[in-house]
Image 1 (cartoon, one colour):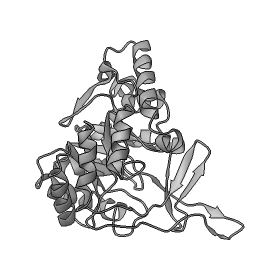
Image 2: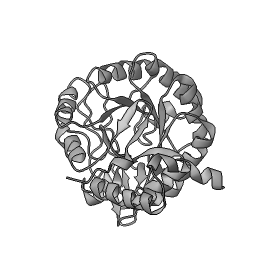
Image 3: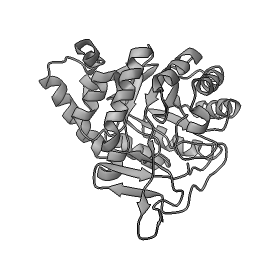
Image 4: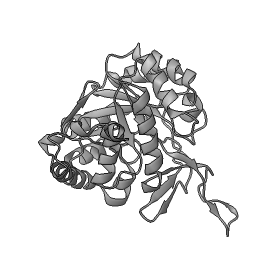
Length: 309
């Protein structure tokens, strides 16, 4: 089991995490056993696979292209077992003691509210709204790409559930901070940023896109500067907490997000490359780094880079 260090505990938006490292949605969390495994390995909390109204098989292979350790391109197509089947997977993770955030995706505000209500009934600690998948037609960025869309969806969900609502913001927009402000106005307890960057790879020999869907989403170390910039901009515009996502491979990566304004971070591509043991490693290394820099608590470092800028 990974080491979980007391001085890394964080509390925000009604959530209590034993450390700031959340399993990101989409990489590892389709089954209850995988969620429980990430928790046992030392994650501070786990975010489920994004779950929709009905089962989805996703796109045909190939769905993933990897680039050494600097990134991964994927277009999975939001495969999931559907909201009627998924609660049994959450029960498995709950029996392991995990702190769980349920992720949902939908095509409009009413469907988001219904799904979030069903997810809340499972006993998850919060619900994350996938408003930002870059490659699923009719979902993600297509329904959460403008402040008006985000505000309508978040308002519907916040009015339907009593648990914290987290809006996951897209970077594929001219002003991610405006999306975060819309989420705040509508009652979001926090925002998470970012989802993957819209991207494509071409096979020059086959003369066609590498992924079957063509357009995919880029994640991993290559997008960290973009994620940091979005967190930086959002922190300056909203009062609700921010969860940083994008290219977190080391403890220093995580602390950069914290200093830019994040209270917690989600880790995805690093899990794909290293396995769930990454959570224990990151927690140990971050504890040592925070101590070396003279902070009594990780929370003391939140947003400090803004005061030095």
